[in-house]
Length: 138
Image 1 (cartoon, one colour):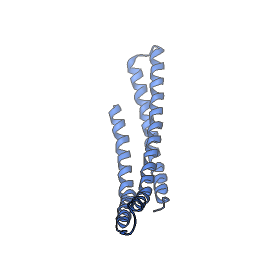
Image 2 (cartoon, rainbow, N blue to C red; image 1 turned 90 degrees about the vertical axis):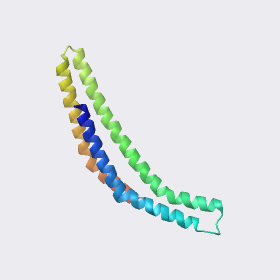
Image 3 (cartoon, helix red, strand yellow; image 1 turned 45 degrees about the horizontal axis):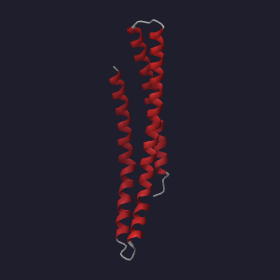
Image 4 (cartoon, helix red, strand yellow; image 1 turned 180 degrees about the vertical axis):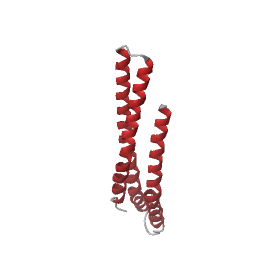
């Protein structure tokens, strides 16, 4: 059943990332490519100036990707800590002499609660990411 919990989290995160990519990142990519093409059309600029211009064009997209990556890492860390707490509870229960079926049930319920709690955080995380992406100067 742990696979079902994992699949649920992955599906929700994938949907969020696809939405962000479709509605925010793609537009930024388009602007980056247009900006970079304009840099390349500057025939009087030196190679170094063109390179610096292209780097400036890439900055907003790099910031956006960094924001999304950082937010996903924080989410993953929190979910991992929650499931590690479940493992600790299960180990403590097992050490106290509980039978394996009871430990499995505790683990299933605990991990299910972790998943529910964290899936419920995704809408606010999405909102925060959208606001942060929109605040990146183009």
